[in-house]
Image (cartoon, rainbow over all chains, first blue to last red; front, side):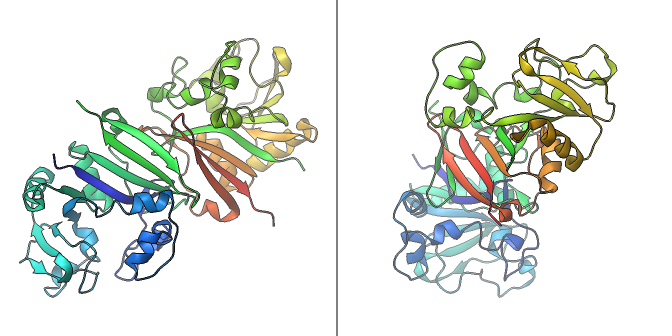
Amino acid sequence: MSLVRVQNFSVSLDGFATGEGQTLQAPFGHAGERLHDWMFATRWGRAMLGRTGGSGGVDDAFARQFADGIGAEIMGAGKFGPPGWQDDPEWKGPWGSNPPFHTPVFVLTHRPRPSVEREGGTTFHFLDASPAEALATAREAAGGRDVRLGGGPTMLRDFLAAGLVDHLHVVVVPLVLGRGVRLWDGLEALERDYDVESTSSPGGVTHVTFTRRAV
Amino acid sequence: MSLVRVQNFSVSLDGFATGEGQTLQAPFGHAGERLHDWMFATRWGRAMLGRTGGSGGVDDAFARQFADGIGAEIMGAGKFGPPGWQDDPEWKGPWGSNPPFHTPVFVLTHRPRPSVEREGGTTFHFLDASPAEALATAREAAGGRDVRLGGGPTMLRDFLAAGLVDHLHVVVVPLVLGRGVRLWDGLEALERDYDVESTSSPGGVTHVTFTRRAV
């Protein structure tokens, strides 16, 4: 059975997944890269940057599940570009010519545009659709493999509230960001449907996994 | 040097330290006892209830620091009783005749009253004072030992914002409470002045300690 998964989704101790003031240069606003430093310290994260070395422990074990068994991603409009990208018909995302997805990616937007094919197997499609509709489309494209929800927090909250998520991997980073967009709002009692496990790492973060209970 | 410490302060994954709808019967509102179940599963917590047994691992190691080296506590008005206790001149707190503090306890309230002596060494004093003023008074009473800040979240935020806390032990419980009173609001970049360490326990919670850096 194809699962709906969230991997490597980092939040601050106070629950913010992005800071305030998002721009092209600062896609996470005033949070900068601090929510994701843990990932780029792993073997997997360093390899993503074309580097060697990095830690091979629990942070790495979680991080490298990002692509494993994934056949498609769904992302929110805010992840595809800075505010206003919809007004630029040439905008193809902030990842350069070879984005790190290597599958079909479905971008949720109220202003769909023609699909964009990039190197390495990534094709961006644009959907004006509900979470359930987008998921049906992504599932078909995934060809039996899992669908990853790529965030940001707003789209993720919508999918969680709709009960569509099978596996949620959140990484709590010990920062108090104070402002930005929160992950947990409106999700009271989310834990009821999941087995929850917390694992702190020597790198200083805590991996919290929500795995849907067998019914 | 006498330190200002917070011990066993539990918050939900979304940062709430109390739920909504606090009453005498439900001092943590809709959160019930769920934020503190981890503590009452330890040897120390069970002994508090007059029972034997309980876990003797990392949760217990943290929990039993509650009283160790403490000479006084400061608590907010909301911890001393349900809303409206100030109107009841006979109110002596919700802990019965032998409260679990066994030191002077300073209750912050805009309506001070005469001190109340209880069994076991606990005396409640009532102060209408700023955090710094209350701390000076509690420190004197503590006679060289540490001062514990007992919460709730509102008073704790005030002391943290004023830079008065040396050691903060927060226990993150994997619940999404959704509503109540948050701990972290208004404390952006709190981590800058502290060494932060996170330790998940087999009991399912994560102990996060903020220890003030040597200057």
